[in-house]
Image (cartoon, rainbow, N blue to C red; front, side, top):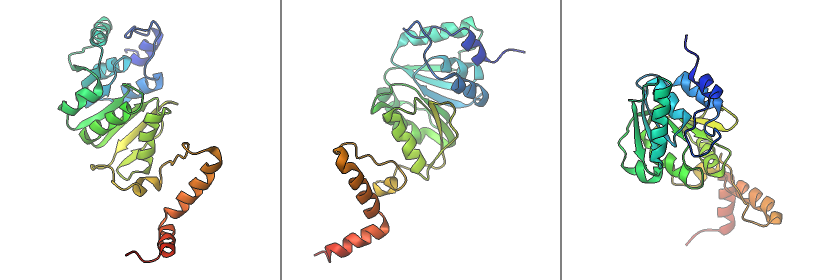
Length: 233
């Protein structure tokens, strides 16, 4: 019986990037992918690495977006060296916010967002990929503690269209799409359950601003404000 690929990669990490050290998706997340990705699934990831090898080994119809053509060469060579069929991989060379608007990949079963981590790139990845993810499909968010990615997690926690699932690793979050539709236009539809930040204010004003906003953004608070303002002309 063949040993799980994740264990093999952990024992002998492939050199897929410019760094001499292994860096990439957490080992727990790789093991999760190996367990949950099934042959024939339609999948996509922003970024590339050991996770790409796991998708290939699982037989998924997998799209990979990376700005580095050398990564494609290294990954295909590493797959060949380990006897992994990489014919189901389709690489798109470019930055994700430039590639995703024109890519044709509807009805995705699973998406891994692990490309550029700085704001606003993860949010752009989510924006372009969320409509292409089928209902019930899952999106993995690596390094979910970073601000740009944490904003997606906060939105998913507050949204009726998404469900935050159990964490896969200390840094990898998973959200499931429950229904199609764009995010609501009104801020109060998100602020009711999401995280509000007043970090732009001096420290002494943050607590008052937070309490005031939370009280007066409720239905009762809005009613009080309207009464205090009197009739509008």
